[in-house]
Length: 81
Length: 392
Image 1: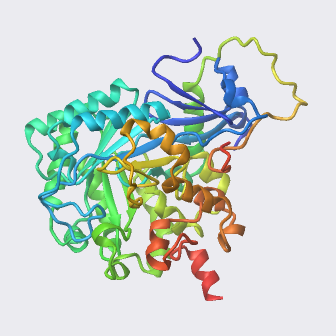
Image 2 (image 1 turned 120 degrees about the vertical axis):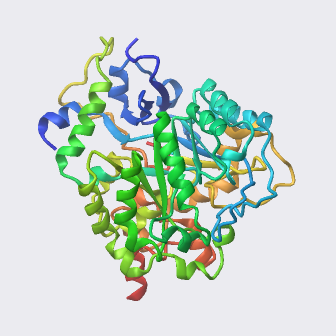
């Protein structure tokens, strides 16, 4: 993933293309995993764009030196992420 | 307001789940959520333990009625089955709303035969739920086609061209599936094709994908054949993919993804993920794009025809002497042994799952398969890694 994409996608843990329509087992789009990284990056950038514009925040931005406050992506924790 | 009202949000201990207007689900961490003006409130208090958060998607059986009689029907639907009344289904929808569920997938039996198909979609939407439905296309009439307009997507079951459908189901409904897909596409309803992979139709997968695309479907959902309902017999062993087909699955999907890029989305169900454990070895990539294995009791739940909560549609929870109200799903989700058992097993699976690099996303594979073949929850016996470990 390029630095630009990584920066834009920061904080996006999971993207699940939806909704699908299967009534038995949950389904996940997988073409991003089999195609070039460009395709996956495009998906992330599109989602990031959908989450803009970001509002003015009253919180102070995290210091570049402070540890990220990320609790890991879903699927990785039984005590959910 | 940072996010438009069309974005549904759900706080989580890790941050937030968001549903975008196109129904894409996005998980963001706390800083990103804050930047969007969201606050997780008590769920962001790390000093206390939190109960499991609700599923993202729940499957709801609305009827046990189906005239087709497929040999491997996982619900054992019959021609004289019964519909669940709309009032009871609305109580279930209340429960799903309270759980914070995003998507409700209606199934059967044959959902098209339910008399309240259109009101059901409206009731789901009124509760902030995205309604989707799966059908075989049997019984499609102009009125029922119209009723399907209310659904975000309709998937039509199609188990293969050139005799594949007949080989899998024992009846040939391919022409009905074709007709349904064409009609849905013509009226502008988003439509996908559900395709159950078996030993008998695997060789025709490329042809079936091309057919689905030509019909106008926007996605092909591949499903693993599972030993549930009428498929929970010895015949399962001759229907499931054979080891060479499992080993070829990754390459086959790669070829399909390249052939249909941008024209036909390719999806796999949670039960197929363990079969790809040798082909997809980057757990970060799997996680980022939400490709998870067994989701029962986690992102996925199911409500059976009698209102009982289950980890997924393929498991039959023990009959409870006390029938809890349908709208009490939020309480049941936290306490029901029927779903808690899935969570407990995933927490500490045995080898070879314990040391598997994709354990966190695969979650040990399909428990319905392991229960059928081994008699209990166990590492998925059809996973290539598990097969290799067993052979050592």
